[in-house]
Image (tube, rainbow, N blue to C red; front, side, top):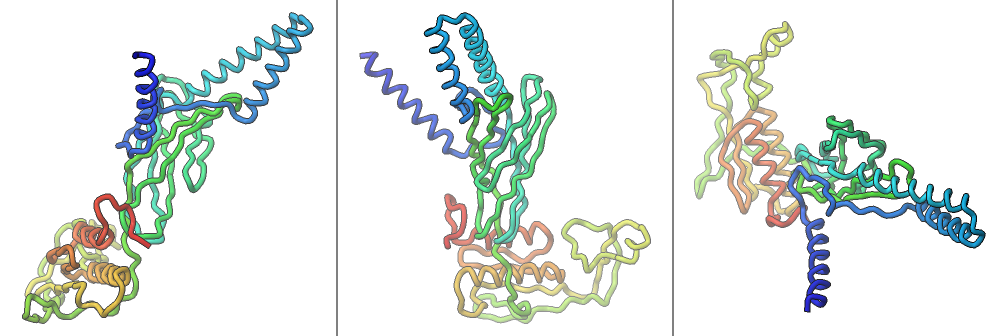
Length: 330
């Protein structure tokens, strides 16, 4: 009975290993024995065939020097296997989420490699669907960081493509590799397109209220610049004189507020609406206005600043996409 069970158990373990590699792994990922594969390269296959021919010749002619040379080269091949595998073994990969971009742009993921064991890893390669990064060396206790670029043509949440860390060091006879599928992602905003002037009215239920204009003429005070302040409020003359960055405060007026509403746009497709709203968000933020966003599945109350702009753009990027969807449909 055991002889029948064991093959099934081994097959199940093999399938689980494949499924594990398909799942996205949280960063960091450490390459252990179960993750690394090794096979001869083309040069390695030629090397193996040559050794077999040498061994057959040594046996046929009973040539002791032939045996010595053959087994010496066999030992060299075994050492090459060990060092090639060791060059990848116990390497740790850590990747950071890329900064948000607009559709059609290039996302840049920062990949950091570190090695355990205190020895130097040489001539590593990171292969992605878009290319190969070669000549990566990792010192005994050092960290090596490389940039992985990935073009993103559609809005949504794009995950880093599967990568493979591989090595043929030192002799090029064997290739050790480890596929890695990490959960790092980038949020891709819709492509902004010219949407005309910002809306001048906001609808609340059945009532329509005029938007108040900003009273910039009544200067009140100065305070240290804070992240999210409009650049229009910065006291640039002081900055030019080498002074600390300060923001001008105004009183006696009210900040202009605009409401960016999905239903206020002219009839058009979903992606076109998102692109117009994206441009409105950028315009309102640039002009220092308070603004809110209303789309069919979400409403973001009026606000200002970097975090508010990011929340609005992310809502547009992920609109209509389920939790498991990575990018918008074509």
